[in-house]
Image (cartoon, rainbow, N blue to C red):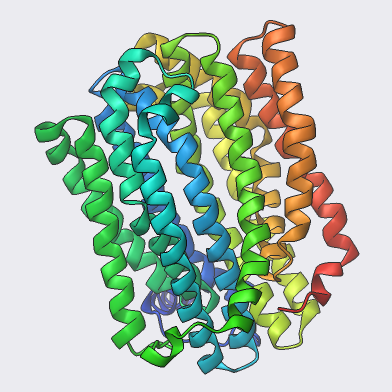
Length: 463
């Protein structure tokens, strides 16, 4: 009885510490404990993002296949914005973590401020271009005339409000680099909590554009929460006015890491856009909608695993900054084992329960049929995805964003796209060929990443 009480107390203490946001030194002590302390809030952060993705498509699905297709096609192109946001976030995480590992919080704060200056300048251009080109974007993606007519206002609103997407990702990257995963978690919970509440209300009154309004307002609230803690909070990162004056050396360092980081994500995202375009080439709205529903469900389970891999990025950056490369490597190995086990459970879930899961999100029989096939096929490689995520974020956390970028360029563009086209079009497998190409490619990326990781060149990267 005493042992059981001790065990429960120990778990509650770990949960309290991981969610409290209090500063921890992750460059010393138990690696397993460090991985768990960082992973819990990061997984919970991504769980909320997953819940929002499902809730969003759930309510939008009530508006019909064209609405679902609009959201999916818009988000396929919106990944170009995400690529910039995530590239900057990668750079901020890597540089802030390195400075924290070096026990230099003032320089970490200076780096954070410079990344915000960069984000604001980039987003102005993206927002204006996306808002004006909205109908052309949907047309390029192969949307039907009815989908373009219905979705233009939605796409225009989403791009116009992309500033909140950019800042939410970037500032959470700053918090993660500082080791304050709890603050990143609460930011996203607040943002997406507001989003989930507003989504059905605004869709009821404004239709599909209401979904875009809910996203902008909800994430805007989350950004306000983040900025309050950066400017007036008591955390290790504290921004002051003088840190926002452009600093060429820091901006160049961020640009160097962010450019390859953004290119890395852009390569993968653009490949997903091509996958979507291959499916829309069959001129089957149900297939397009089913694919988008399956992607939302896949993300629901992939994002928590991404949270675990984010923990690896923070630990790699801070331990390299502290001059402990072997501890950084061991952190990656530990996170990989945990992530692989989680993804194995998810694979089994999709193999045996894909039908009920999809049926909960969308009741259209044609859409459900495509989505179920996608889940069952793509989830066959989930264990590899889990390990691959950790390895990719380990490179990024070290500031070595070039390595996963090169791997992605060859595997996605020289391998996945031709393979998907050959399977889907030449062998006439249709959407099933696209799903098969995704599994084969992601597995290949993980194997290649593991071989490169073992060589250890990432340990010597200077940022």
